[in-house]
Length: 271
Image 1 (tube, rainbow, N blue to C red):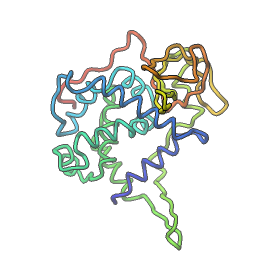
Image 2: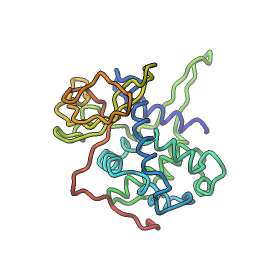
Image 3: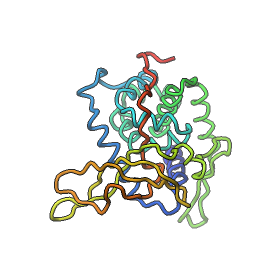
Image 4: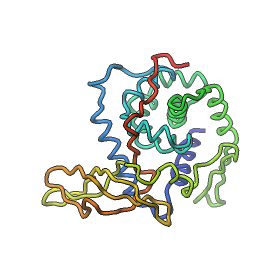
């Protein structure tokens, strides 16, 4: 069913956003990761071209992501990590790796009756998360889970057709509750996040990358973060200042890894 995975991840994304979180937080997250990817572009990387099978995606992801994104992705629970990457990294690989077109990677998934790009990117990120955590990738199990979701998702539509809802099977699990998710963001850890700013005489809205120290948690399970550094561009102003404490949604920031942390390095062929 073509809309199954789109609606599945839209529901997962809605689950992951705290009730009062604004759309701006998601936009700032997208801008932050796009900036990282522009720094770590393919021109400076060893692997060229595009992956053609699942086992090839892991080395590509490993060289595209910087350690901050890898570390955050690794330490979060699997479903939260994969949901976090659906935008914008997932959007990037779905476009760049031809999952919407007739690419070799798409053909690889089609052989296993996986036809939706959202489902393909979910399997790719699930596999990479398991690789980083030194866990079995279990590709066969992932394919079976995908088919189970496709076969057991229920679509209900109102009698007049104006509204509807999607009911997913309970067996697929759920995202971590916000009160539990903050445990993955310990006090005194340092994070990267974005805040809003204005540029030029016309006060165009822009994002400003910040480094901050987690100093506590809010009642809504956001992070209380003390700003320790702001990377401001030319002619950019912001209402925030160094030393100020602001609340940051855990889903819109990235943990800076410990100095001695090293990610697992893949071979080209991953079992």
